Image (tube, rainbow, N blue to C red; front, side, top):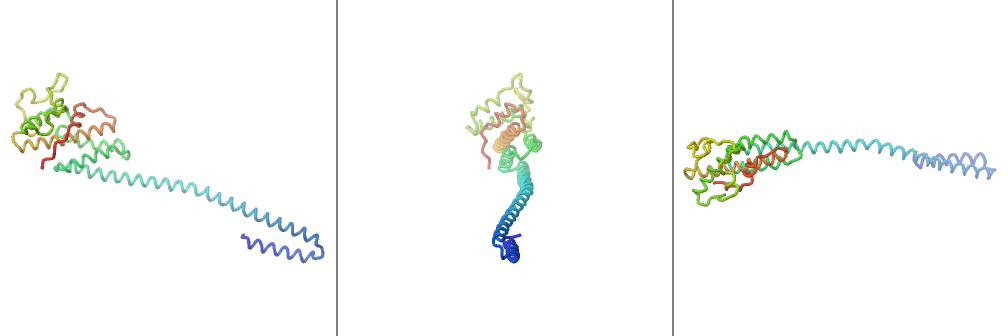
Length: 250
C-alpha cells in the first residue's frame, strides 16, 4: 500500500465521520486525532514490514554472493592451471628439440613452472624426465667424465670458454676412494665408453661444448626440482648447475 492509497482511505474515513457528527465539534476533534494516530500507525507498520522484507532479501542474497565469489575463484584457478599445463607441454616439447636455442627456452620455462604454486608435487615431478634423459643422467662420475672432455676441448681452443673455472677444476678432479668408479678413468683407453664425442677436431669440440651446455641446463632444472620437492641434491650436480654456460655454436 502506497502513500496515495493510505491518504484516500483516511479521507473517506474523515468524510464519513463528519457526516455522522457534524453537530459535535468536540467529538470530531477526538475522531480526527484518532485518524491521525491510525495513519501514523499504518505508516509505521508498512515501514517495519518493508525493513523486515529488505533484511530477508539481504540475508537470502548473502549465500548467493558467497557462492558466486567461490565459483569465480574456482574458475580463475582452473583457467590458470590450464594455462600452466599448456606452457608445460610446450616447454617439454621444446626440450626434445635438437635446436639448442629451443632446448634452452624450454628448460628455462620448466624451471619457472616448477616454482609455481599452481602445480602439486606429482605434477612437478613430471619434469624429472628431462634431466633423467640427459647424457649424464646427473650421475657424478658421468659429469666428471664430460668435464674432462670439455677440458681437453678447451685446451685445444687455447683459452676457450670456462678455462680455469673453479667448478671445472673441482668437478674434473681425479676420483677419490669415496667416489664411485668411472669406466675409462686413470689412463684407460676406453675414451668412447660414455658415448660422449671426442675433441679430435672442430666439429667434435663444438659438440662437446653443446653437450656441456645442455648438461648445465639440466643440472639447473634438477636443482630447482629438488628444492621444490624437498629432495637432496648431489654437490657435483650443484657445482655443474653453477657453471657458466658455453655460447651456442651457430
